[in-house]
Image (cartoon, rainbow, N blue to C red; front, top):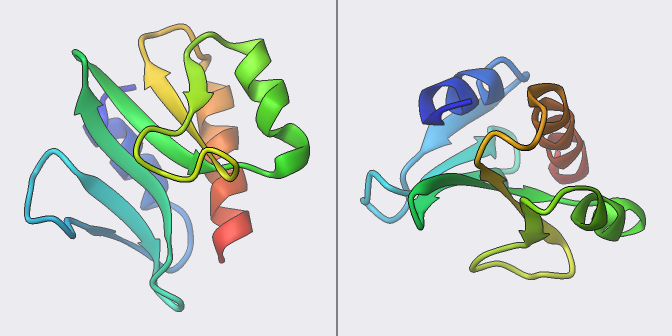
Length: 107
């Protein structure tokens, strides 16, 4: 999935919106409209698109061990967030699932 596909998928979830809080096109966040909390960070780093998602503590380490491209979150609390490195090694269904789980945790 590329950046636009990720953003478009996120925008299919109810009551969310796209935001650029740093006035930098590299950093896209998707927020819940009601509480304005971010559930997805999308940015380019080291030649790949990265997606930060909030992770349930019970599953956080499982996902990190299941895929090399899922690591403790870049630039966020590593206890609560994972980074998905979009290098093609994480199935799209898994990416969508983790985005939806992050949405559920934040809303």
